Amino acid sequence: MNLPARRLLPALISLFLTACAGGVPKPVPQAAAPTVAPVAPVEDVTMAPKLMRPDQPADFWADMRDSFAMPGCEADPQVLAWARMYTRQPNRFEQQVNEVLPLIVYAHKSAMKHSVAGEFALLPWVESQYRHVPGGKNRPAGMWQIMPQTARTLGLRVDKNYDERLDITKSTESVMNMMRRYYDDLGDWRLVDVAYNAGEFGLKKTIDKHGGPSGDDGLPDVPMKAGTKEHLVKLMAMACIVRDPARFNVSLPRQDRENTLQVVTVSGPQSLAQAAKQSGLSMNDLRDFNPAYRTTKGTVSSSLLLPKSAADQYRLGPVDPVADVADADVDEADADVPTKTGKRGKTAKSTKSGKTPSRTKAADVAKAPVTSKTKADDTKVVIHKVNNGESLWSIARRHQVSVEQLMKWNDLQTQAVKPGQVLKLTASR
Image (tube, rainbow, N blue to C red):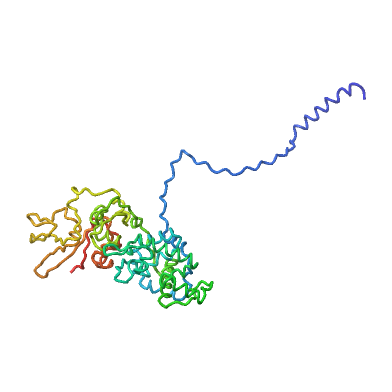
């Protein structure tokens, strides 16, 4: 190749590559995208904040079910039979449970404190239906039905003025402590109930002689009296209803926070009348929650058990005796509300027109009959004005009528009542 051709060759090669570059470009392989973890969306702070929903109250019955430790509804046919017996009138059963619900909740709280099976919060239903039964000589007393000898063993005070078997706080604390001790000795919650009904020492003798129960989930197969066996069956039946209320066509009432019972400390000794006034309760209502006082002359020196609303009021301090003189407690007085005849009772003052003063205490109205006479008939209608802290249950108990009667006489659809509400205590004629 001559010299000019050699010089021309690089230029030709450059032109050829340029021409090739003008064609379709060759694809360049892309590098794989790196894997990135998903990022949580960032809240736009410029947006209006979300509405905060209040926390729903805890389901008390769910907590109770979780605390059960005995066999369930299928433990024995008698358990189901008694569960159906208790709920044969569903509406009545629901009302009964609602009336004593604060006591059930209080007993369950104590059971959890002592690590006792939740079923034992229902034990007073079997013993007394949570009634504060006064004990006679050598007779059981209180909602736990504690015998005098057992009371002495538990260190509960029993005398003519005060019976701690009826003290809800102290008796419940003592019973739950005893239940825990029974379980530590026996190792079976079913046997704990047997020991409570028949006696711990007698049960231990039976076990020493015949052996303990087998490991099945039925009733404990140890010799026991028919009444003791029925006592256990009834307790398991109540727990069975709580486990599955729909099975028995009942609905368990919701726990109202206002109905919870609270222990309040008494700063200094005071009479029951002073405690009632300070809490806003009548004397009778105060004793319903503190039934250990056998006489109204008792002195409160340590603590009181009160509904939440009354406990809150009590903690505010003593009532001004001057400002509240017109509202003095007269539960123990035979006060009569003035009638159109112009007559007046021991605690009420009449005006010239014979009308009742506007500040007459509701307890006077509750205890005194308002009489209206007509030509055709003499009609006597008794009314009650609801005080702070009162419930339909406490009003019914005070006047020895049933809750159903009060609801019927006053056309009430629910048991809710408000302070100042006037209730008829007799049927309309």
